[in-house]
Amino acid sequence: MADISVIVPMYNVKKYLKECLGSLAAQTLRQCEFICIDDGSSDGSYQTAELYSHQDSRFKLIRQGNRGLAETRNVGIREAKGEYLVFLDSDDFFSDAEALERIFLKAESSELELLSFEAELLYEGDMERTHRKDSYYQKTHSYDGIRTGKDFLIEMMSHHEYCDSACLLAVRRTWILEQGIWFYPGVLYEDALFCIQCLIKAERMAHLPERCYTYRVREQSIMTSKIRWENVRSRVVICAELLRLLVSLQNQERELLEAVADYTAQVVNHIKYLDEFKIQRQSRDMEDPFQTLLLKAMEVGKYGREVNENVILCGLEKIAADSDGVILYGAGNVGRLLFRFLDEKGLRGKILCYAVSKKPEEERTIDGILVLPIKEAIRLSGHVILSVTDSRAQREMERRLEELGVEQYELFDRYMYRALRHYAQRAEGTGDDVHE
Image 1 (cartoon, rainbow, N blue to C red):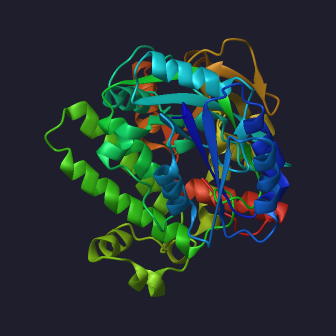
Image 2: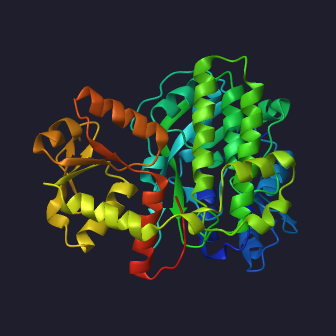
Image 3: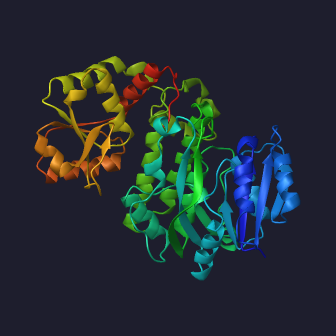
């Protein structure tokens, strides 16, 4: 039996496949298998993989008609013989030749059911500016020891560092088969259900704080392509399943219920950001009445008809223009969008600083603006704009402001964020591509 089975779905990724498969061929771990599944490619991906299989017996090739990423991964799980399963997307690669060896030694020596590890990001072209994802994939807190997956989920959610990527997990094969955990077929975002089920059920889990995996952020990938009806439908299906999961956990400890509820709320918020899609006539495509109810209850699709973005943007401009200065509390995508908007309106001089909850390890700037801890930033007597949209982060930042005695501030909502995104897209001539 192999130590690790790496499952690699392939669909029209010939451009990236040599780097992906080359990183497998370079692995120092010899007792492993690389299950490469061609999911109906038409660009020669299968032939590229064949070359590697002729040179390295660890490569196992499967060819099938197009069945989608979720079911293709399930095919890999069924075919695998390794003690642990690892998932590799075919446009990504392992960061170094010893990555699998470190993953296996950590998992095996601790007799784990589940091991998580970290990723470094490789941005393609201009993607770092338009789709920056560092805060989502990289962790700043330590997650030591061997604990239940529930404990890890609760702690990672409390730090806003839970990442629902199956590619950052090593899973014991016999355990996952016993638990009956599979990828939900026929939807996008299939990692959401898979990962959270793994963590909820794992009794022995650990985290390896090493960037073993390189995630490529590229144009026209599943996660960065334009919003389609399938994005809407898939998210609603995932949300419905998460709610069913939450109900099944009603006798569990409160901290777990809150963590799963917070995660589900994130999915709901993401659905609400898909407002541009004209979905009313397509709600009939939902698989069951519960999904249709969710679609209607979240009022997806009403944004374009009911929100006047010009009024929102004029309001943001007036807040800054009439103030002695503004403090952008939040130095992520939202804050930077607001900075760009105010800069283009000739109000750059009104921006006093970016503010963050914790003091940066060293003095730094973003967009040429100083980043200060909020405790120091409020000494500048500027108008605080709480520039994040994540509800949990907002609550924590509001509590921090209350502790500091700040009573007056502006709170961002999803309409303000969407208005700024559309403004930036119009300025760049990039159309209506919407991603969160």
